[in-house]
Each structure stands twice: as structure tokens, then as C-alpha cells.
Image (spheres, rainbow, N blue to C red):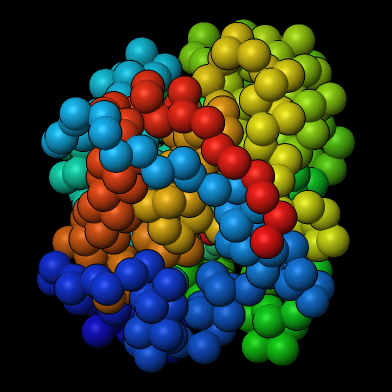
Length: 369
Ligand SMILES: Cc1cc2nc3c(=O)[nH]c(=O)nc-3n(C[C@H](O)[C@H](O)[C@H](O)COP(=O)(O)O)c2cc1C
């Protein structure tokens, strides 16, 4: 264990024997300090949207296929010009030092081991450069929380470009922080500095609550910002937090190279629909012009399958990976991805879908049980 500013970080480094991803939450709760765990697990208000996120996958069903004369399906896929071993990626999540002393560096290492894609958050515990180096050449994206201070945005984007990230994810659903009661109950303040904020005049985030952190973030984000970031970085810009076809079309009109369908894991607007229930209509509006990433509530191989069959090209997860990080460091992260990929492979075989392209073409049924 490493103690920083009185906060006890896990130092574990081991492979995990995972029955399923939902079971990781209770295990992680035993080793992540209360404030940090509350910040990770929590959603906004009464957490209705958070809970519906996972339940909503039951609104669609996979069609079982048997006489398809196939075996050994593959989860390899090509998207954004990248060749990946799995369509499951790491969502950008802040402050992973709350879960492990090596923070995002260990996550990047674990994701690289499975041939996946890692997204770094602006509010990471390790710096852009350090996290990129830990990925050892594996592809990474950088997620930007746009600051009101454009000089600061440029300094982050400069570092991301220099570190070789393949795309910028612009998160647009967090112009204020969601009303998260868990953080209020715990009077939660980040005990560990946010490495990228050390450049920023307002401090490194240590000792601040989430509301204070978001106070420096831009509260007005428009399609012009998408174009400005694309022009500045010359990298693809993926807009994250899209929940309607209207916003997807606005983003594409402003030059977005990807649409990221997400409700932030139920942490922002509570009372909105489960993310999965919004996916198919958005994908239809996008109509393959740019790739679609999906997250929020993904815990099972069948969830990944259903998201791909509903129009996603990549499927991300947040909390389960952070729990794996706390429980086993880089190897724990690797174990989480392997467990979910294993379930996906079984589902692919039993649905007669040999590769990810076939999964994307698979028809789902929508029977209301
Ligand atoms: C602890 C935590 C921190 C997060 N930090 C960020 C962030 O910095 N930027 C961002 O765009 N999304 C952030 N998210 C949202 C994730 O990118 C993702 O949308 C969400 O975790 C998906 O839901 P899931 O946790 O159910 O898989 C965070 C989520 C969690 C749980």
C-alpha cells in the first residue's frame, strides 16, 4: 500500500480470477478508501439512469444461430485506421490514482497487453506523456475537458499530439458536474494531484472537490469548438456524450471524425434514457459516415455484442476496469478485458458470427418481456 496525503492506494500487481465483471465492485470496495470508492461507483441524483444503463440491454435480444458451419470467431477489428485485437476499449476516466498507486500508467500497460485501445482523461493522475509511454506504442486517445482558458487547452493538446495520441475525444456532457450525492456524503476531495493540471494556474486539483474542478471547465461548448480542436491538432476529433441524433448530426457537421454515444455512466444527467436505448437511432442518423463508440453500463459479453449489433464500432467500459486496476494493477486490468472478451467470443460462436463485421450485421430482436 502507498499512502499519499493520508489516502491509501493499492499497490497490487496480479492476475485476477474473474467470474464476472459485476462481482468486481464488491471486491474493490474492500480495498479502495471510502471517498475514492464513492467517487468511482456513484451516479447522479437517485441513480435511476445509472441503474437503467445495464438493465436496458435486456430491451434487445441476440438471435441464436446453430447450423452456421463456423468455429473460432475472432474479435479483431479495424477502426479509425487502427488494427485492434478487441472492440472493447478503456473509457476515459479521471483520477485512477484513487484505485492504484500507478494510476493510468498501469491501466495503459494492461490495455496494451490485450491489444486494445486506451483513452486518457484530462483529469488523470499520471501525465499524458507518462501514460503514453506506459502504453509502449499501443494506440491511445486523449480526452479533453475543455477549459475556459484556451491557452491551457492548447498546452494539453500540444502534449497529446507530441505523445502520439491517435485522436482527441472532446467530452461535451459535463459542462457542470452531475449532482452526485455519494461525494457530498463523503465530503470527497481529490487527495491525489491531477498530473495534467499542474500546468494550470488554478492548481493541480489536490484537495478540491469535483465541483471546484469542473468550475474551470467550459460551460458553453458549441460545434465551433469541435472544428477549432480539429484544426488546431490536425487529429480526428470524437465527440463524447452524444445522446441524440440531433447532436450527432451537429457534431458531424462541425467536422467530428467520430461519435461517442454515452451518458457518462449515469454520472451526469439523471432521468435521461439508458445509453443503450439511444444507440440505434443515433447510429442510423450517423449512417456509417464516421465510427461510433458506445459506453455506459457494459458488463457482459452479450452487452458488447448487442451494442455492436446496434451500430457501435467500439464499446468502452469505465468502472469495471478501475476495479480491476485496484485489485490487480496492470495485470488486473488485463484480466478484466480478457474476461469480457472471453464472454464475447462465446456469444459470437453461439450467434454464428465469425468476426466483428458479422456481429455488426447481426439482427437483434426486440421482444418486450
Ligand atoms: C470514476 C470515473 C471517472 C470518469 N472520468 C471521466 C473523465 O474524466 N472524462 C470523461 O469523458 N468521462 C469520464 N467518465 C465517464 C466514462 O468515460 C464512461 O462514460 C463511463 O464510465 C461508462 O460507464 P461504465 O462505468 O458503466 O462503464 C468517468 C467515469 C467514472 C466511473
